[in-house]
Image (tube, rainbow, N blue to C red; front, top):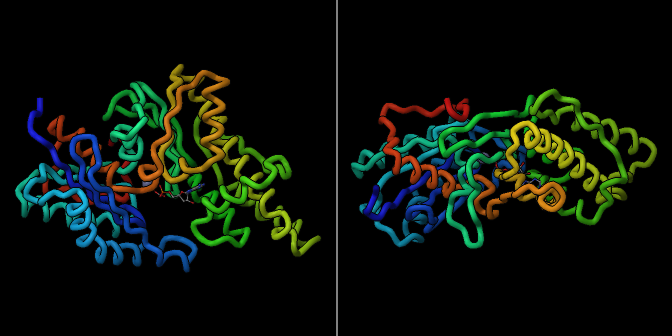
Amino acid sequence: MISQDLYILAIESSCDDTSAAVLHHRRTLSNVVATQRIHEEYGGVVPELASRAHQQNIVPLVYRALAEANIDKKQLSAIAFTRGPGLLGSLLVGTSFAKSLSLGLGIPLIEVNHMEAHILSHFIEAPGKTPPPFPFLALTISGGHTQLVLVKDYFDMKILGETLDDAVGEAFDKSAKLLGLPYPGGPLIDRYASQGDPGRFTFPIPKVPGLDFSFSGLKTSILYFLQRESAHDPEFVEKQRDHICASIQATIVEILMRKLKKAVAQTGVHHVAIAGGVAANSGIRKALAAAEKDLGWVTYVPPFEYCTDNAGMIGIVGYLKYLDGRFTDYRVSARARYQIGS
Ligand code: KG4
Ligand code: ZN
């Protein structure tokens, strides 16, 4: 039993957001994120630019996180960092920084799997939120990942299914690009979809066995659809934008919900949590609310600040691992590929 106050400094640098957070037990005292705008002009994340930006951001961000938390670095109990999965160059920045600071301060180092962190973000204390009970199903939907996981305990998770090609966020962003929208286009599709008719256009639902997902076929069918319609009417996209967005969003939500329903039927677990940037999508939120009402599920959606990549979710895993004495050796290296439970 830990009696002293625990303060965890957490660092996240797996993709294009640099983030630092300070947690006091399960509560975030600060959670600051520097979003790298430089990638917008390229229509996607450029790995080399991302790692350079992490290098520039990391020291000032850690200072800001400590200042906002009103904590001196000497009070820290441990440093948690994202070991993987992600872009290797980006991960290296956070990993090296965390190792040196933990050595310098003489406090434990704790490695965190980014995908476990998305799921365990539900255990950060948040007003009006109750964490899901074990076992629960977790659907992690972000720009880099789509994963359906059975969570039996904090560190006992089983992947039931994942995407065979594009991630859900990529499906949103690539569809948006086809519509001429800027990167990342997911939030824009969501916004335009709210003014459109989801039944106006129909896109195929891929037939993927088991609990795996596929989104690359959808992207291709949208491309052909837009080419066909624009050949008749060059202003088609402009005139129909809201309806196209609503129809794309409805198709993506339908793909996700079908697999979730299958997973609930297979496991008998009806506590369903979502995580990751796409968890901000209003279509998926509405579909989950309907499943609560119609199917008796209990659903969990994290507050927005813990959906997108952030160090708060790394910190909660750091805290839970600290309680378990799961510390990390200094010889640890970053892992671009890093499966949950491996
Ligand atoms: O978790 P996240 O911040 O970063 C990754 O780890 O990828 O997720 C970013 C992804 C992007 O693809 C973005 O378009 C998508 O989440 N996204 C959304 C919405 N908000 C963010 N997609 C659909 N609707 C939204 N409201
Ligand atoms: Zn993520």
